[in-house]
Length: 581
Ligand code: PEP
Ligand code: MG
Image (cartoon, rainbow, N blue to C red; front, side, top):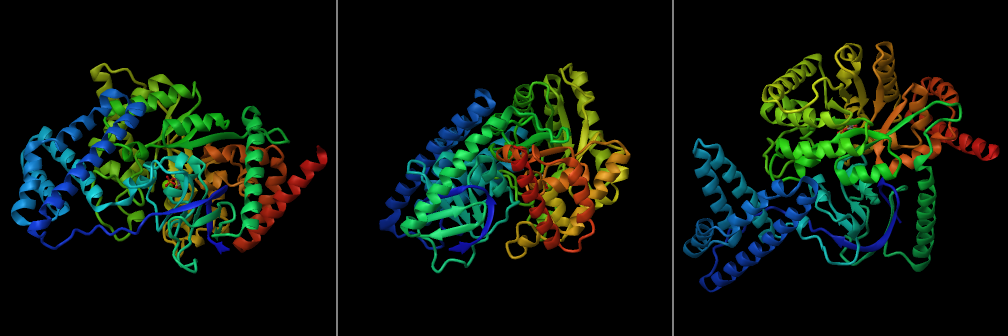
């Protein structure tokens, strides 16, 4: 038995598929004359696979954003048939005896540099297309794993050193029974996505196995306890298979709560919203009883696209989400790129401390051209539903004002162009930086609502990188420092009558629920999968008792004391509810 960190709940039993630890290394050797034909074959095979993949992506995008936008892939397919591009690659192989991947890389660099020199938007876009297609081809030639996942095999447990959100974006959830990663953390975006898909995930397994896992090993993962079994005996498999069945039965039972109003036994209504990153996730969240969307992580729209999504593409997705919510709020968070979220088609600078670097609202305020495209799409979608806007990673009043300036400019433009939109939408901010906690009273005067992003807030409060597996375990939401910060935000918001919700992973943690309710939080936004388990506990948890509990918690000095008291409180309310049935 191996103990890792549970990052997405549930049990998975199945054969491992191990992603090799790839290095992005180009071969340096010269190809022998007799091997040249083989390089041409490899090139053709790479092209064939890239075309197949682009056709698939086109179909997928077609469903999300529509045919016209998906037609960008036609341009990509055309590049793979372009005689000039191809003869450049072939010429490098033939004349310079270079391997296919080296030739592709040199051809991309050549054309991109050439097009970039021209002061012509159209040609610059072509350069971006060539880079994108060329990189896809390179990935195939080098056998980079995110594209080589078995797509026609039986479902498997994916084992990787680390998974990036963009690798997960390409996964077919039906094929993945569970995920085990050596590095990573429960609040990484890969973990958040696994939760949204309902895929069990255990992380923090580095150096814990007696030997490296190989493809075909039998694994059991328990995403709740973080326990992993490697090639377990039959009795263990039977035991976990039964637990898995019980869990599935419980999940089916919970479904009955989907339409039950989220009201505590002492009559306090709690608003349960969902965090989403796509339309399919919204569908799943609504089926799980989500009342609204408290956080639309729009960066996944950007990550799923071969280039920055256009205003029209974004507008269609936001509008669709707004309409699906039938008047309930859709809180759209502006692009939160950077840290662990990257775009294949945009080179963010290498940084020593990416979490503290060029990301989120800082990126948007630096690239107002891209920011305005998103804001225009949001304002247009707002004409079709209850759309609200939220800025991420706000650390100062200036940032809100600068972002609002761009928002007003976007609205002015739409008015001048006669494009239907709604300008007076509620604008809120994420509270996820300690600076924002310290000036919550000042920020409250600038905005319509707060949403506490505990994932980032905890990492910044404790100065612990949430992605670093050496110290990630120290990102402890039950530290007294975190509790005091949460209280400071709620108090400042209450004084200025600004509604405050929580949208970090803590919102979906049933153990934290009494603490959040006791602090005065009345709105929670979480992974769709967490809504029903949270509602089940909420229905038996009186707010009055939670208030008294928080009084007690504020007197504790260690996370251990807070955690133990919360566990006891949860057991007591469960027992009390059982007795009153
Ligand atoms: C957070 O930081 O808590 C949050 C919700 O934002 P993200 O996890 O996307 O950084
Ligand atoms: Mg955040």
